[in-house]
Image 1 (cartoon, one colour):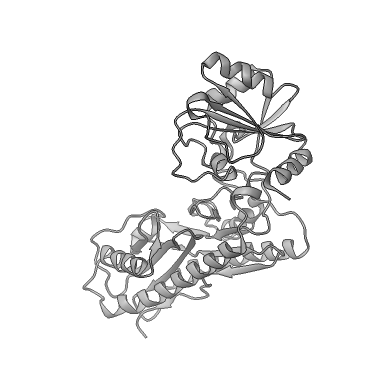
Image 2 (cartoon, helix red, strand yellow):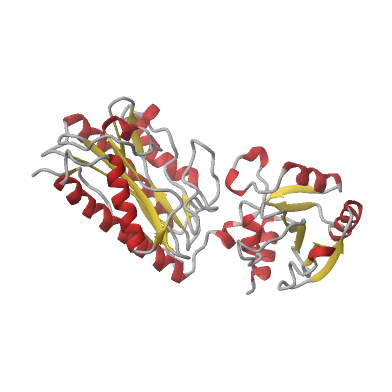
Length: 386
């Protein structure tokens, strides 16, 4: 089955008349990914690719970039003026009522909302209802090949090894190194492995660990400190690993640190268990449900207000991908978890002025529905001084 055949099958299942893929100056990377266009391929004019639920695709390109979609199947039509663009689109979409685009009503799922409001208005003005491609799009953008799955497993395993090494390195240099020094050490390891990343990792001590997106500074890491490390990277062309772990630069965490750790770990286990149980039963599972599984544990323990972000995010070639997110806080993600996808499970509790605990692992759903943890699990606080 070709990509077009698969798209048409999904369109029919959704009750849509077709999928109108649109891009201008690289504004819709999801459409370009489906179309097999290299991210660096330069285009400077609007183009459209119409995939009807039944029938052959149609390409609409500007006259000065007529070659843009030549590698794709379907009839090619061209426009030059704004008026001819409208005429061609009206002809291409004739008879279609529900037209899917990378649009999200009320921007509910911003990760797929790549088509600008003006273009949505334009298509509506031609008499069509614009619907969201969000439900079927991840089949083409977030589902991984077997080679990609293996690259994710390697990346996550390498990150876990780096963190284990970092605890030893920090112990040996207590009182002499800063958060920034530790960050640089991790980056050196990334470079040695020829890994790529979109932003340096987080190393946060004490109250800084209560800031989920803290940027490391000049704070010394000293005996007794609470330490959080969050790191993400991938092989060139591969899939990201993304994990977070915590430690104390002492012989044991405080009773409060140990208590908060256990709540977060229990929340993480609850989310993982839900995924495994639901998929083993071959039942639909939506992203918001996974978030609720973790969040309810933290809320019931009395710390709900201190869990200020979603439970997890889609992972693919991009760190925050286009698949279902484990989210019923920042957005209500009703998209299902699909075989062949990867995502993080990372609940947290952040106590301002004190410390924060975030535990992050990655979950891979293999194509046969089997669920695998990558990046390792943390069952107890690492103690750097024995």
